[in-house]
Length: 275
Image (cartoon, rainbow, N blue to C red; front, side, top):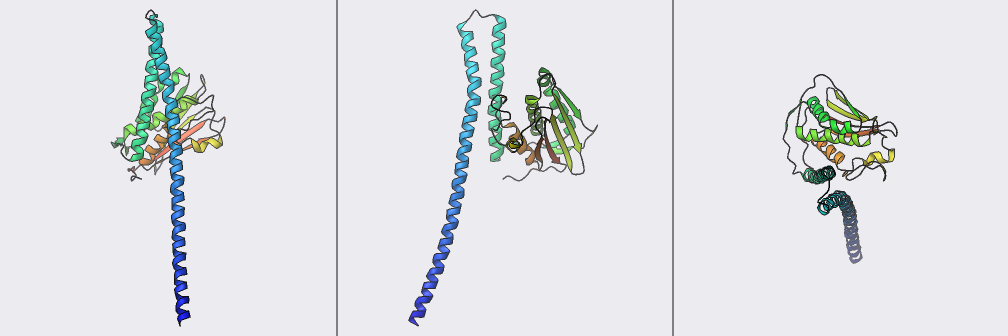
């Protein structure tokens, strides 16, 4: 009986050790996952600092250099001075866009962004966005063509946020269309589920290995030589806005065939629950 009792106790200890071992394995896996997440966040922080520092340094250097030139040469001609001032204003606007995009991304991800929903005529909104970017495309010798039904059903959303999305897509297309022969086709399609907007440019397209990265924060299209100015936040912000209203955004592109970025919004757009 004593031997049986000892054997029973040993089995109980063995089961307890097995339970503790499994608990330790789970805790180890959770710690490993937490560590991997921290490493990922650390890399994102480094990418953030590197990108923002670079984007800040370039316009600040330009502003300081041109300002010092005007200070050191009080006899500078009016035409030259106006040219320098125009560059300074443009670089200041670039800094403002950078700061606003970083703040927008932070607010949306933290759930503190403000949303002001009302009935939205998406056709009228797209037309206004095209008009707003007209000068950008004119300077590049490019055209924007709208293909849309005469009337579209209204949906419930924040018009300012949706305008931000369309402006981001148009501005992004303007960076890649060929100068002098650029063309962007904007299509509005509707069905029983909702409304879809396509922004299709005739630029160089996106290589297959880059297509999954275009919605990553701070990722910029193009190579090291042709990469355009920007923060790499326009598309990530746009996608988060669209997903906030229960929609989705995607990209279709073939090298040499241009790029089409589309987003779909359901008719009964409702704010998605905070993550």
